[in-house]
Image (cartoon, rainbow, N blue to C red; front, side, top):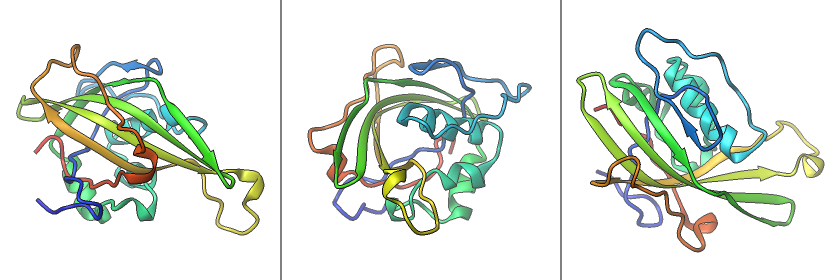
Length: 184
């Protein structure tokens, strides 16, 4: 396992989910293809869109939700990490946002339950960080929509129902991400 630039452990984040409510989404089965969802209007819907893309096996779309500075894996590694993920249930906590100089950072407490194609279940809890450069201050192409800037999720022994996502103080300034496979 490699180390993140700011000494955070790398995180396994390959996720597959269909859209439901902003705080809890139901896992899908291999026979169900969820409706397309690509919504970058809030941190919650951005994360749900990520899961929707993976659930639909649209790995390039999923990969594109992360900024190039997020420490994300290259596309091939990201896509191969998704291959053994059958589905994921997700719980989102209360989003905390802060802004500075035309940019809004948001921390999203997150819990996921990953089901792999071999039937293994794993629970992860942690935090996503999103970043939005205010559209009104973007004057040159390319336009930068709301994106995932960083993530930190760790395996937990707690059940999905008992686990809680946690964003440490200052999370908007310190998190980094790596993308490997939850289902592996």
